[in-house]
Image (cartoon, rainbow over all chains, first blue to last red; front, side, top):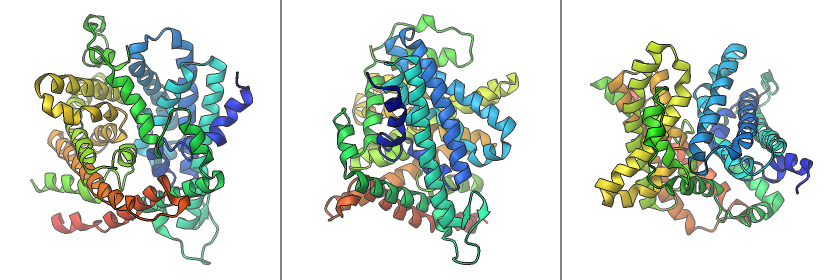
Length: 256
Length: 196
C-alpha cells in the first residue's frame, strides 16, 4: 500500500511523464514556445487527466474489459471538449495560441497511459492524486522548457522583456529545431543526475528498452490487437451519429 | 490544379507534420530504428490519414454542422478514426493478407497517433474543400514518410557512432531530430517561390 504522498509525488519527480518516461512529447514540444503557453497546456492536460482518472476509476468495475480502450477514449474526449469550451469562453487568447493541440489532448499518451496503468486498478482518491501528480509533473516540465525556450529564444520571461539589448535572442529556440534540441539537453541532464537509475527502475516494471514511448504504444497496441471479432453489432445504438459506424468496431478494440 | 499541388507540397516539406508541427512524434521516435519498419509505419499512417479524411470531412460538413453540433468534433473524430483503424485491419486481414502481414502490427498504433487526428482537424480548421482535404492528408502522410525514412537513416548511422555516455538513448535521438528539423527549415518560402 503506497502512501498518498508518494502517489502524489511519483508523477512529479520519479516518474515525470515527459522528462523521465518520455510520453506525451507532441504537445510538450509544440506548446513550450513560451512559459505561458506551456503552463496553459499543462493545466488543460492536468484538468482532463484528473477528471478522466476519477471517472475511469469510478467506472472500472462497470466497463467491460474488452472494450475498455474505446471507453477510455470516449471519456477522455468528452472532458477535452469541456476544457475546449472553457478555454474558448474564458481564455480565448490562450485557446488561439494552443490551437489544434487542445483537441489533440485526446491522443496524449499520458492520459490513456495513466487510465490503463493506474486508474483502472486503484481507488478513486488514489487515482485523483495520481492525476494531480502526473499533471503537475507535466505542467512543471512544460513550464521549465517554456522558460528556457522563451528566455533564450525571445529574451523575455512570462512576456516581460529581460535581456532586451544585452544579447540578441536566438530565435531558432522558439522554432521547431530548438524544441527538439532543448528537450534533448533536458533529458541528457536528467540522465546525468539520475545516472540512468530512474530508467532502470522503470524498466524493471516491465518497460525494457530505451524508448518508453514505443513501449507504451506497444502496450496500447497489444490491448487493441488482441481483439477477437465480436458479435456485438446489435448492441450499437443508432442514436448518436458516430455510433453506428464506430460502436461495432469499437467493441473489438479491447482485450478479451 | 496548382492550388492542390501547393497544399500537398507545403504540408509535405515546408510545414512537415513531424519536423515542423510536432505531430506524430511518438512513432517518429519509436518506430524509426529500422528502415523497413519506418516505411511500413508511414504507409499505414498515410493510408489511414486519407481514409480518415474521406470519412470525417463529410461527417463534419453534412452531419455535425447542419445539426449545429460542431463542438462534438473531437469526440466523433477520434471514435471514427479508432473504428476505421479496426475496420481497415479486419479488411486487410481477410482480403489482402500479404499486405496485412506487413502493415498489421502498425495499425493499432495509429489510433493514438496525433498526426491522424491532427490532419482531420486541420482540414476543417483551414476550411479546405473535399479535394483540398484529400491533398492535404496525402501530403501529410508523404511528409511523414520522408521524415521517417531520413531519420531511420540517421539512426542507422548513429548505431555505429561513439556517443558520449550521458547522451545515449533519447537525448542524442532528439538532438539528431533537431538537426534534421533545421535542414527542413531551409525549405521555407520555396513553395511561395514556385506557386507565387
